[in-house]
Length: 322
Image 1 (cartoon, helix red, strand yellow):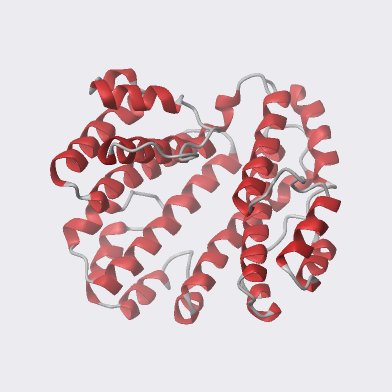
Image 2 (tube, rainbow, N blue to C red; image 1 turned 120 degrees about the vertical axis):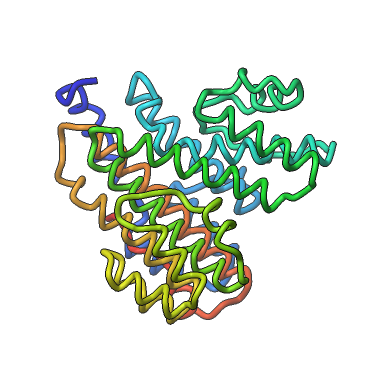
């Protein structure tokens, strides 16, 4: 589609943005006394339906709404592959787990993806990795071999997670679209920072971190790994020299503060798209805004279900797009 061809899809997105959960609705949800009261309030705002018995069902139905809309608005959904590749690699993990345990699992595959999960399972069963898309073949073969011969699920996940990051990064940064390229940069950088912090905490080796981290322009992962081998303070000292210096105060606070910072940076990235009318960027921004909205609902509903104090829930909530 050309830029002019996005005028109608963007107009549709503008109307959809009006139904995103805003600050007023979030305050109403925070004021609800119970999990059940929250469900009622959400359904009044057309978020979820009476058919959604569990929180996971509610979230799944809302994600389906988002991607059904995108399929209406664009001819080729592959324009959003930067966002969808992560689901492909989740499905690869799920298929390996299913074959390794020789058990049937319900609802372990994600529907919104670039490649049919059933074909991933078939390729693994037949060990015919050429059935898979080129970006997944080598990773799938290696991860399958590790899991089946060693049972090392952690290493299997590391192999798949790194390739997922690399696929996201390559797709986003090779795009001529600013939202996709900047999203990919942030997504990989934040993943690397979290890997460094986690590996420092549990004493992982240099080789493990090299196998886990993906390259990106905004971080020098060699320096990040060296810092992680030393101390959390060293990680913070390195990050102060990068564009992510603000995350240091979150590191000092808590893991939930780090997660919030990362998600809020994505929202800051897409906010300018509220004033763009001629490219695919507002559609990409809407997808990310919806994911952020869903994350907020999960945080809030989980908090209500576990009887957390309102202040505790509030400090975890992400910035809103609207």
